[in-house]
Image (cartoon, rainbow, N blue to C red; front, top):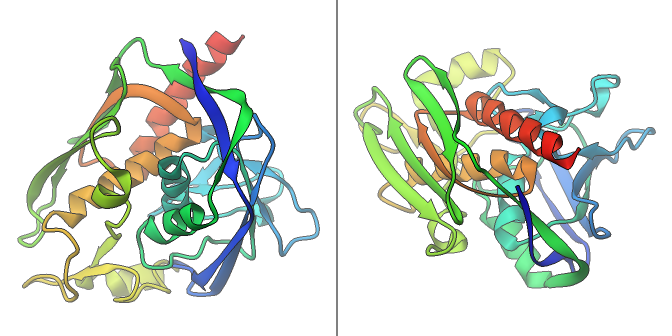
Length: 285
């Protein structure tokens, strides 16, 4: 079921952010521009001649290896990776419509959280648009599972995420955190939580062409004894997992439901997002 509530929003004026890309290790820049009502979030590769617009939707996802990447199945050169933190920031800032030019194959990671994007959007301000904002209300439970990892969404009058993190690692261990958009502050509670990685995995990731831009400036590094750099929250790891869920669920715009996740990652998030999208398309038609 779809309901209309409030008005759609875009940015007051365009913003630019640049920095290192987490996986390629290359310099990257994005320009976020305002967009018309009902446009949604669209991205394109500014370094390519085609300038093919890619909608931030579940069906646009082309890779889920340690990040969420979208692209064109006809033109693989147009792929854009590591969109999840930016998508979470746009959602948290209340942006429904935006056009994003990306200088290369990956979004800059900045500090490893969603906060730099969020802060920049808030600095330039937000513009209300004439069209009503649409929310998709989940009316039946949907779920996906992969062994001990799972994620589901159930009917709820709002948007809530309950996440259980459980790593077989002495520093991370098991933790639980909950975010409810009607009660909690995205900027204070979730947006600043950074991505994290394990020192013992770095060499293997590099061999796979991943995390080449990772550093203590943009990720929490975990070794056998503790974290190499200080945490922003005692439970920053599980808060960041919720950030990832928000970013991946934002592929469907605004939804209402209660998400329960256990040890889930981008692959399961997007599988659930695709199930939600299937229901949305059925109801739209």
